[in-house]
Amino acid sequence: MQVFSPARTKSGGAIAGRHSSSPNVGGTGIQHGGEGPTKTFTDGIDLKAAEQDLTDQGGGPDAGTKAPDAGTKAPDAGTKAPDAGTKGPDAGAPAPATATAVTFATVNASTTPASMSARIPPRIDQSVAVTLTGSSSVDISVDGASATNGTATLDGAATKTLSASGAVALRGTTQTAAGSAGMLRLVAKAGATVVGTSNAFTICAIPTTVSIVLANLITGTERGIAVTTSNDSDSGQVPDLDKVQMSEKVQYVNGLGCFAGIVSGNNSGFLPANASPHGVDSHGTPIALLTSAGSIDSKQAFVFNDLRSGAANIPVTNSGFNIHREVTAAAGGAGTGFSITTSKAGLATTVNGSSVQAGSGSATGTQAV
Image (cartoon, rainbow, N blue to C red):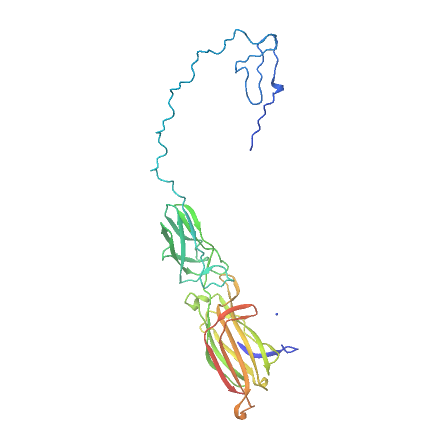
């Protein structure tokens, strides 16, 4: 409610391995009166095994040792090369199967404000794209579903089987309870193996639009208009907003004449959003203030708190209005000689940091002061 009880400012207006070929001195033994030693190097070459028997007694190699038989035949030049006709891998063999994987598009209603976490309303289908790779079919379900976390269906059933990429219609059936936000995900399984999950989300309805119609003119000690204010629900059912409260935010600007210096007024706090209509919004001005010509604008936007998602001070997307008051000299000097026209219409605006698009509806009224 915007009962115009103004305050004036004082001035008038916030691994690599190691290879060594060095002898292993500690491993070289010299034997007297027997067979010569076997010299072992760290690269593993056994000289004795190579038929070079070394001793530390005098004399060179045994002269009786036969030279290699000169009659040894060279390799048979007639040996055939590998058969060039040997077949390689069978080109007709099937390729290995690709591992199954699923990717979900983001689960989030288009009506969700940017400042709010991912959510969907109840009752309304949300199309979620599903990309499937691999040769297996998958079963998709809602992980975490319960009476507390919320429940939903996929194409009207608890599960959905896909054998190719496509989309599923996700519909919330039970809203998330307060304090249990973000516990739901879509999950895809190939047999018992999880092959994909979606982002976390909540099921809750929110208001998206505020609308007005003229209720009546304000008379008595004030002049102005009263408008009936209503809000919708993106679930299609306003009663689904039983955990939502809504409040107006108002900012006064451009005060001139009798309205110069006015920067505040009497505005309402948070009220339940599940009532229809939401309430009556009064835009009145005390007659005692209307002593000369003047004008002023009041920018209005609505915000909401939602206990299901835990969101607070979220702008209602389409809830912006401008209230304009204009005082002029009355024709014929009726009354005090002034009249006031109070009008309200939807307008995209920013009010104290909350940016919104235009609300719906308009109302106007002209009165003698």
